[in-house]
Image (cartoon, rainbow, N blue to C red; front, side):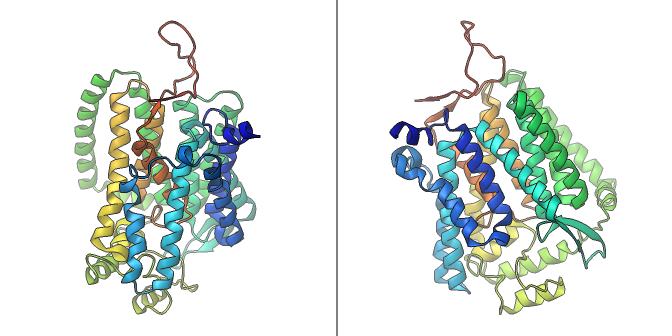
Length: 428
């Protein structure tokens, strides 16, 4: 019995449980509004009981994670000046425990299991949406779009983006074979259809950009670390110059026009302006975590009315950084940006320095995806959201210095010719 329990937290032996836990977690994140509090309790039941198996191994040394917990802790403190203390207290505690669950997953799930679980989970989310989804009229542009089982086409597009990205990583970076190759290919086709059906310009463009970057990472993987640095410098200069020429030639308007958008991004620029003004009113501390979009707050009521949000809930400024500044001020914004910047640069640095590091490549691309979407969506600021869960997983890998990944591509053989396990992990 003890051996069976220990296998739940052993990265080399818990593939079945870990894959199922990640997949079910993503499904809960997607549809917790539909299934209610029972689904959230089920999510906690997947991760928190693992602490009882071996709390030292599952939790690790949380002193190392202080920079990861900083924003969540500040969100909890904001209850003391919040415009809606009860809402802040509840959601801040939820966010904090959500971060804990993500770090537990990081300590017990390796990158291959995470990828498999994400492919299965995102596939289930998309399949459910295609079976029970609906079309909604967008009053701002006057068109109908498929939103699936969500209230917004952008959320459907987000899960489609995750499905495409993790399927690509499973096939081309983690070198999956046999049934997982077929599953990943099938889910990627389902996700591509969902992206087209949702007509979410944000999701389509960010998915294309991140997959293109992942292809580049895969090609660079064959080069020595020193050669990668030189090519990255040259490539970075050319990319910046090309982007400058493209934008000056009116490329942005061409791309937006292809998706039926105008330069206001369907009202987003006006919404951003309103958010900046709201942030200036409480510059350093904000109005309190999750305390702006509250019924009874005059500014929130006005924006709900202007954007035809009849439910008077579930809205945001469509920009993670503006939303963070409004709720937690410049202090909270800096703390959240630290998590994002350290995660992106940390995994990029690992990938550049190491000859073979599929984990760094996968998590770097994931962090870039979340960062790009942060300029037009809010994926990492709320509890029980796939974006925040995956971000803190990726951040935790950097903080957990005792782990040294030895995940090798299929067919790799050691110096003496012996085969190397594709999911092996070495501890110092």
